[in-house]
Amino acid sequence: MFVFTEYLTIGLSSVKRKRGNYLTETIKSIFDQSSYEELKEIVVVVHLADFDLAWCENLVQDISRKFAHHIIAGRLLVIHAPEEYYPSLDGLKRNYNDPEDRVRFRSKQNVDYAFLLNFCTNLSDFYMMLEDDVRCSRNFLTSLKKVVTSREGSYWVMLEFSKLGYIGKLYQSRDLPRLAHFLLMFYQEMPCDWLLIHFRGLLAQKDVIRFKPSLFQHMGYYSSYKGAENKLKDDDFEEDFIDIPDNPPASLYTSINVFENYDATKAYSSVDEYFWGKPPSTGDFFVIVFHEPTKISKIKIVTGTDDRQNDILHHGALEVGEKLVGTKRGAQCSSYITLGEFKNGNIVVQDVDHKIAFDIHFAMIHVSPSFTLRPAGICVSFDQEDGQWMLQWLCLRWRKTLHCTANRKMVCGSGAL
Image 1 (spheres, rainbow, N blue to C red):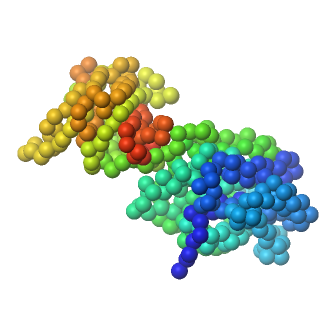
Image 2 (image 1 turned 135 degrees about the vertical axis):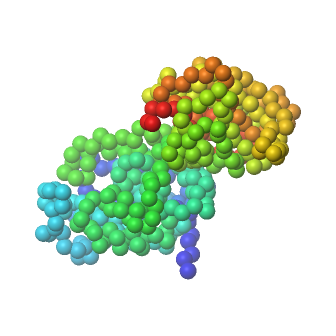
Image 3 (image 1 turned 90 degrees about the vertical axis):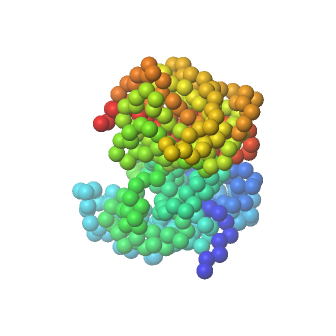
């Protein structure tokens, strides 16, 4: 039986670089971007994995001087695995025709992470893998917890909060021993990020589950391998973004024919996925039915995307209703109000709760007669603003203190048919 004391362990592995050293900046970002309450649920483990003991000792002194209060509080641990614990790093397989020094570097890195994972196994409920040259978004833990809550009841092995390398990969602590063993078994076969993908697949998570905006950004300019320049950036990162909410319970329906498996529910997910439909016709609709009638103060709908700015809903209306009743023809609305028409693909309605007298049971986008659509389609995604519920580009802001999951897309069109 495991007894965890914290919610999240953040693991960093660091070696001496020929140019640049970003480790203390990364540690500082983790702590500075966390609130006092969030810090109570975090433990950071740093594996100083270089065989140069003088470098390790100097860095320990630097970390102790800069983060003494976090060390005393037990939220910062520094570890080191002796060189004699490592398997042989000579005569390794040269898979992918990598040069010998590259194979040695990535093989040792796999073992570095394996030791780190093994140490962190019983420290918390969840484990986050970061690199040692990372900047964090504000209140990243709160955003992460909302995402984890939204995944309750569903199976997952790895959740991704950055699209880069080993950055922002979340695991459940119960899987850490298996992952550590996996990295040790195949340490000389391929780079760590490739092994992580294989591990996820072997544990039956077929698809990537990645969230936007990204919670972590790569900030290092020089790589830990030979000091080579590394300008990789995550363009989905937002340092001060409105944090990811968790959608209130609702069912989604559409009369638009679905393309392949891009069903309507994917437009309501916090995962980076979307609804994709075939070209709609006059009278088609996309509707969200809330499991409980809800007070809403603002609704905002924006169609189109940055790279498909002409793919907008030219003619459509937004309707909200009080009640759905069962009939022989299925569910019908007993009363509804048209809040407005789309203009240039957008609609924003303020003070909804002052304009209507009832709690909203459903919100519907209704395609109007003169509707035209460019090939790539309509996009609708979900987001949060000012700590209240919003769905952006179909955005709902709640008057009560609810939370809603964000940043997903709905796409209607024929661009990929």
